[in-house]
Amino acid sequence: MWAKIKASFKNSITILWARVVALGGVLLALGQSLAADPNVNGAIQQALQPKLIPYYIIGIGLITEVARRRTAKAA
Image (cartoon, rainbow, N blue to C red; front, side):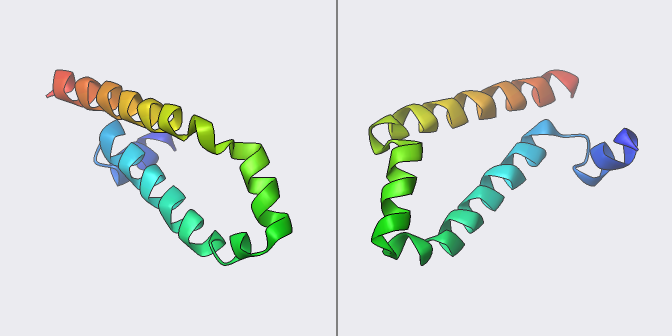
């Protein structure tokens, strides 16, 4: 089963990670209409804490770097 999953991403963690990030973007775009509600907006801000967004982006970048280096090493 794991071999089939890896094959669907061409054995690349980088491609898997890119698809996860893209899916997250799609979910955020779809949830944008919900964020117009002040109650939902407040809950999102409390959960994600906008002041931490730069650290989330740094984390995404680090994961991308590690995935790419792993894939480059295998080639």
